[in-house]
Image 1 (tube, rainbow, N blue to C red):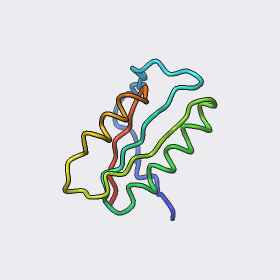
Image 2: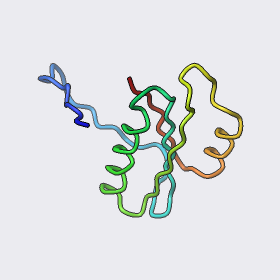
Image 3: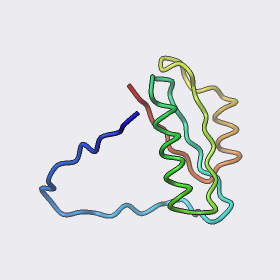
Image 4: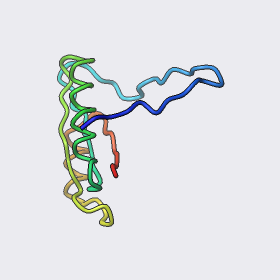
Length: 92
């Protein structure tokens, strides 16, 4: 699988993104896939990049499994109880 960088030339100033969640070694970042094809693989790559960039952070992946279904209460409870931050993403 190969991911291509779709960015072109910037037309304006760059604004840095500041992480709002207090993350430190041992913090868990949830990765929540919506079940579209490719969403799990994409988030695995994101998780690997997070762990390389910020050693000590832990990622955990959840997969909703069906893009048309709502997230389960159990998944949402587990994510909110065990994670300092979450990234929700989809694939196609």
